[in-house]
Image (cartoon, rainbow, N blue to C red; front, side, top):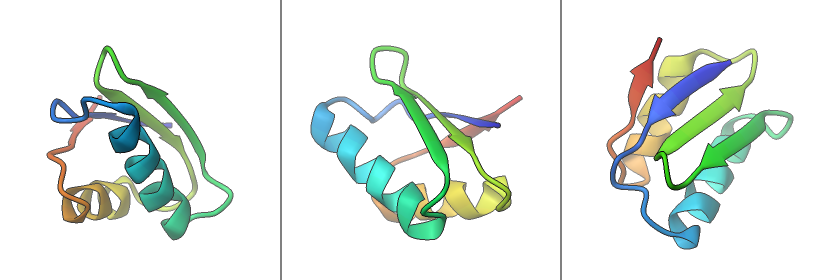
Length: 66
């Protein structure tokens, strides 16, 4: 599981946008978002860098943790 810190994710619209972005890359990915903690967890067989790049292209500043 990949864990990203996304400090500029601030509302439900951000949650929906990031979820759609992840699912566009891997429709089978499991996405768990903790909005108050600004954490996005992604379970997928695709590389973490692919999700980081796509979330960034959606307008956010994700940092891979761990």
